[in-house]
Amino acid sequence: MSLNSLIKAVLATGGKAIGATLLCSLAAQAAYLKWEMVELPASSGASCGNGTPYRFFVNRTPFTSKTVVMFEGGGACWEKATCENKGGVQLAAVNPDGIPTNYMSDWNRQAHYGLVTPFTSRIDPLTSVQTQSWNIVYLTYCTGDVHAGNKVTTYSDATGSIAWYHRGAVNAKAVSDWMAANLPKPDVLLLTGFSAGGVGSTVTFPYMRTTVKAGKAALLADSGPLFWTPRDGDPAQYPSQPLHNKIRQVWGLDEPNGLATELITKYPGAGDTNNLGSVTAGLNKIFPNDRIGYAMFQEDMDFSAFSYTAFYPDISGAATDADRQAALNKRWRLDINNTLAHIPPAANMGYYIPNYRQINLSHCLTIVTFGDTGIKEANLANVGTFVDNLLDFSGKTPVIRALEQSRVKAPATNLSDLIAQIIGKSGLF
Image 1 (tube, rainbow, N blue to C red):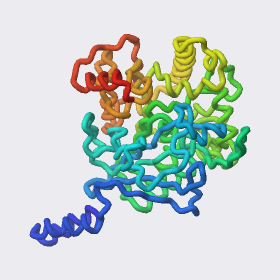
Image 2 (image 1 turned 180 degrees about the vertical axis):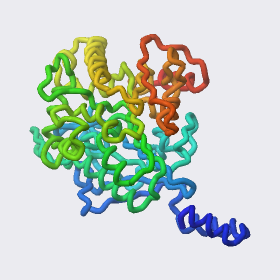
Image 3 (image 1 turned 60 degrees about the vertical axis):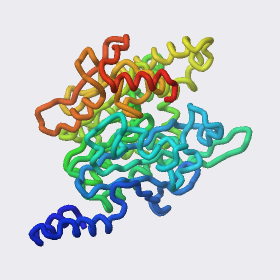
Image 4 (image 1 turned 45 degrees about the vertical axis):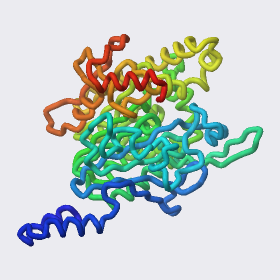
């Protein structure tokens, strides 16, 4: 029974059967307010990188149609060793062995009962956000292609060969189709994701948003930027150029059935397949009534390492860690500036870019807690302010555009910031 049907039934009885009707409804929908595992059939084309079934998780509520979809993060790969990731190294892909059925309840997995981010927690111990009362979809990550691939690639090294199923885009589409068939049409839809999920939420936004027929929609891509990078651009000016050209090939992005080709064919005014980052700047042209936001730290030492280490000898062969970090950050800031220069002057698109916080090498603003993500010089308390701004569909408020100028960390002025700074210094994340 839907919530509307429940209300009608209660009104029909004059309110006398409220308790009994509510209990019966909730009993019939036993998956409400707890994590439900969904395994997609092989016929959908969905799978993890190793060919095992693709599973994602849903936490429903009977009280609203509003829905948040969290695209999980966790590295990427374009060679055998980093796809298999047998050593569990940082610069590789997560979940190389697939998604177990108990993924959300296994403390050894990054989902941690949904506590990896306030967006997937019903009651978060550190951060409150309005989506905690919404339907929640946790789109897991096990393909090593930032949720964007559609190609089976064979990788080889001295130990042998593997066929790796880069099915990220296929998985996201199949989840969208499942949502359209099994969840209420959302009055409001928020797509978000951290790290690899930031890229995934961006490039699959058009398909998911239109498939579920959301009334209103917003995007918050956290620390997974698809930077402005011409295919034939000079790497000295466009540092992500070697990476983008590599993943075009191994993930099939601009092949005939690739996600980039599909997007630009359907929405020719939104970008150019010769510049993957053009999609970042072009989403507002496709959906002028939706609200689109990008967030990242200027001193992110994790996504920048993924982006540049394999392609620049001055980084991979740096004499000291300080030299390595300086080389990473120089390119990262250049990529940020290039991309911001091409963000169109539209009220429905913006960005939120503080300098750094110590948690997770300044990578991801929305994991663990929103604390210590403020831009004090602009009187912005934390990234939660940006979230609330994105979800303001009144038509009166443009999406925030904030790039922190100071490189000196402001002292904690509230308990949330203090806790985040303590967590960062502890080295736990």
